[in-house]
Image 1 (cartoon, rainbow, N blue to C red):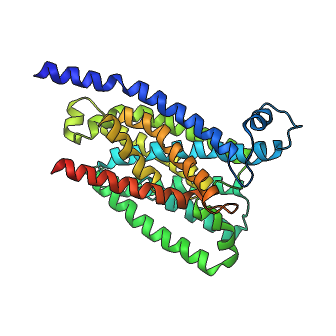
Image 2: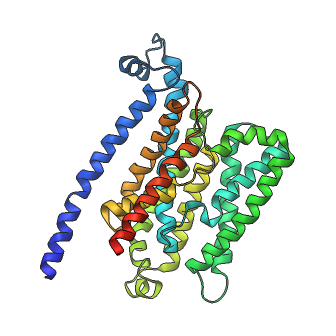
Image 3: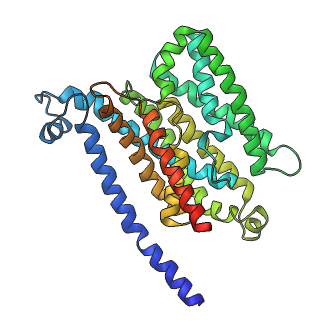
Length: 342
């Protein structure tokens, strides 16, 4: 019987890699669609010419200066949010945990609101630095609150500290936006979770932090498999639980802070995608992270493309469309799990 179980697990793992490659091919196709679709449809040959530097192409400016940065930013932000969702759910052992649960998104939004309201910051490029600084400070505060005392780090205490800090900072941020009309106008697109209006300078500023965050997440993923079994059992297996949690919090700060600062507080991507990945590959955090790195940008780019079409020639921000797409998927998975449990 045990031999049958082991062979079944090996057969399940055998299609994980081909499935991942298939998802990667689908993501490449979606990136191409993102370059083709918009207020003006551009033929494939013109997009290809523009990408290879042919400035004589009539649509060179649209492809290179507008759609290419938008697509790359969707890729980066999607990867960051998807991997952060995996870490958040593994760290807290809570399948409903969202990347913003530790107050990281709220810290980024609070810092940006303060910068806009009191320092006159109005450029998206500056949002990244203020947002990242706010996310880093708040994550350290939440981690300190969640690890205070003799018992050390605890998932429940981390979650409660994050919820409390998020509630306070969100209230202050919304108050600033209501009291300062100019700040609200400048932050409107950012607060809705839009990929528009960002250039290669924003991508260059965000990419290094996201790459480092993904590397830290991959390093923490193997240990999170043991942490999911409980702290005592994880220690018995030789896992340094405190170091694993600290590494995961650092990765969360880099990923969530940078993504939120660059594109705004986009919800449901980090919540729904890890559930989909877990449904496909099982409980192994390494494969969940690997699949989420592809499925999350697919969801975000798909939401962005759909947002260009649903009210054409006007657009709906990707963050709003992602919520409409992610919520039904999450409900469907919850219903499937409930039926399976019954």
